[in-house]
Length: 296
Image 1 (cartoon, rainbow, N blue to C red):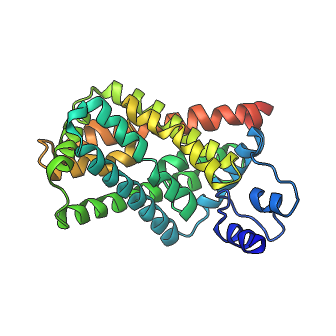
Image 2: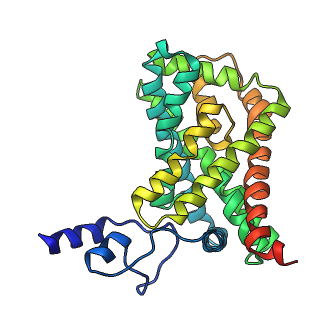
């Protein structure tokens, strides 16, 4: 039984999202079963430099593979969004604030999929690829290429999931009502507020990635993600890739908005704010504490 348990844990164990070699330390649970020692978390400087390495790797993925990873990233975000809308839409009596909290506690599933299944998220690259550039691992053109490919792939993945949900006849009832209300509300927020909310949103999303990367096992990664994502959703902050799914889906559900309004009143401002939150607050802040910016 003990040998079977060790084997099962070794098969189910998920890595920390960064490439590991055959000589890497044993997973913590497996190490304890074998009587060894393994750290449960990494120190902040190590996490930051590992994120920079991950950013360099993302920036060097071949074009079609990068697009595919980003497409799947969009699909992962969207399917988590569908789950959240169906659940929260079935509880209209909670009111919009508590419905948003329900969405917040379910929505992180998409980010878990991305971190563990190898997808790319434009907003995640705003943090890790910027960190790689700050540490001199990649060029400015590689940064722009990575952002562009991730953004295009994420948008295609979100659009595909939206069309699939509509074609499957699932955009109805409370799900459709909540999607339409969300789209209309987000397209009615003043531009500066969208920008500021987007800064804070992607700072929290980047912190979720940072905390998840610090953990050495799946429960720790999930806890890191769930400590941040429900916060930004419940508060009412703005995330560009999430909105690439929620807003067009709301339009399909009958919201009185156009695609032009979705792009100009939300997505563009949201993307810029997300870049400042991840690349400025997190990547530059960490680089000043632990990397190249702080040594200059």
